[in-house]
Image 1 (cartoon, rainbow, N blue to C red):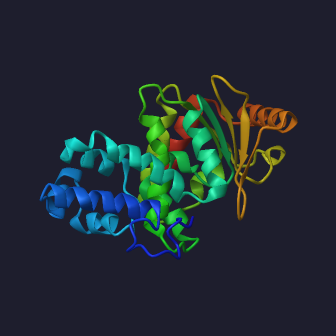
Image 2: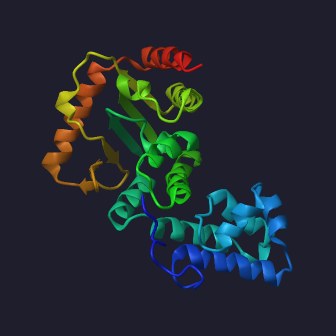
Length: 275
């Protein structure tokens, strides 16, 4: 996933959203006579990361933005507000609409026959998966993917229902340690209401759901939409017939899959294979 900083002069604070954020942090450091190492200590990160954020070469995490607001209270929460803006702008244009919908959804149903979906990936797993595409800004791509997960930390998070083909758990991304951690994250979600994880055992057909990962997003005040993840770009549709077909296919998937409790047992069993 390329960032919107590709091909621009990052020394210009107006060149990109990332450059603007970095420049705003730099101005506060100068105004308050604060060293980058002091901000790094507050943000619990390395000084090198702070330098890259200041240069507009790395997307800041939400935690970093929150640390800036703590260190610079006169900003009155400006850095978290900026963070919301820069993350939206850093996504490819075709993906921004989906991210906004994902953040508003009350229920997210995901199917992936190949990989653990990005919304529930660990940082190490995401890095291993994204690295295979050799993106020019790997760490920014990882940070963007992780930034989407803040919706799971809300007081009232969306219900996430993940249905995976068993092969997705056996396809190694990175190494055994990465997979063990990722399956641990998946197991935690599988045993934490309101979320649900179901595994379609090997040998059970999922052809009716197609070969592309997809998700059905539900909302409190608008009709469902469907996101289909494709190459080189995905797309979102709200066509009533397409949404109905996707919901029906998902119902069949959950009927084919192991129940939630048995799925948790299956995840734990496969997880041991990566020990």
